[in-house]
Length: 235
Image (cartoon, rainbow, N blue to C red; front, side, top):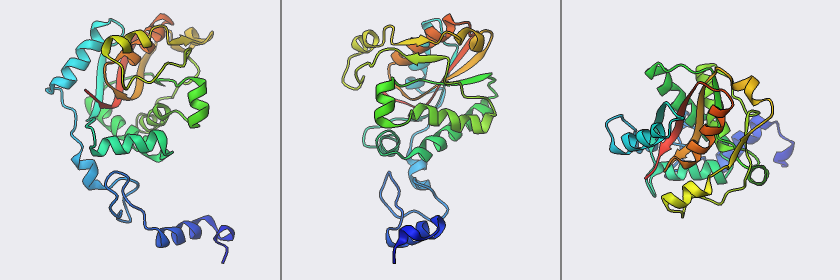
């Protein structure tokens, strides 16, 4: 039997029978109603609260720069924890639906906090990295947020002008220098951004250097307010 000739739904059911789906975080079999990540793993991820030092420090750092008004984030990134496996699958294994789900969870938090925004802007990837990966994980999160808030996702206002090196192994000072002038706005950006309240979305915020660099360009193009949003915060 050639399963490639079967209807897509039947093919998926057959493959699930042969290779039962497992959680991308713990590798245990997934119940029928759970997609990609099991409920147990979601519940194991520490959630951000306003009282946590990691949140207070990140928020203070972003606001002190003068271009960001507030910070919203859902989870704490822990090494070898469930969230690390989730974001790794999103960025490097093409689990795009995970990005949408993360965005829905961020969007739900935004609704609870009753925060208003006009547009949603994902932190852009450089065109080379975007071509290599095939998608921008922050845009997927932004689209998940959009599905909850009903606000448009804008991808034609700001772009990454330099293909910066990965921030993972850099010190705080090196990260800041690495992100200097990393973003630019398109020629029509002022028409899109002037007078707008923007939700600036990234997957994980560590030092905030990327977010700050991008936010400065958005403010310079006429935006009035920027709320930084991420799926997670990391040390």
